[in-house]
Length: 118
Image (cartoon, rainbow, N blue to C red; front, side):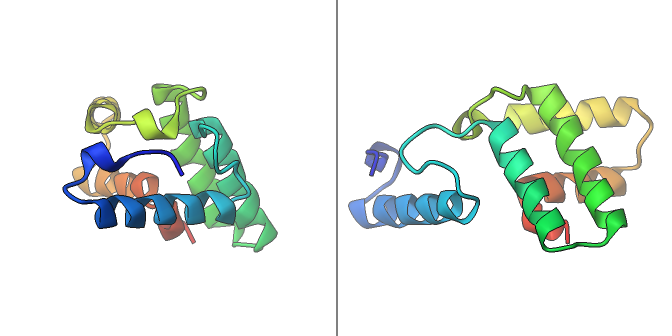
């Protein structure tokens, strides 16, 4: 496991975070020891939605939201390096597109937790 303890107040929390991260990577068949790009994560998530035969409307919605975010942030960006500032840029870009705050909140929830795109 990579050392991530310096960002946590104690060893137990660091280990729990590492276990959760490893579990998420294994769930989407991503390499556990290597860095995961946003492109990898989005592609794996969309494939999983199609494999589970989610309805076409939600799959299309997920594709649109996640690809829009990927285009803004950068497909080769490591998932670990995505920060609040990136989400703020996304919100500003969507507000410039005359989208309602409620719609933007729904999109942010989908980006932060792709499992809500069911």
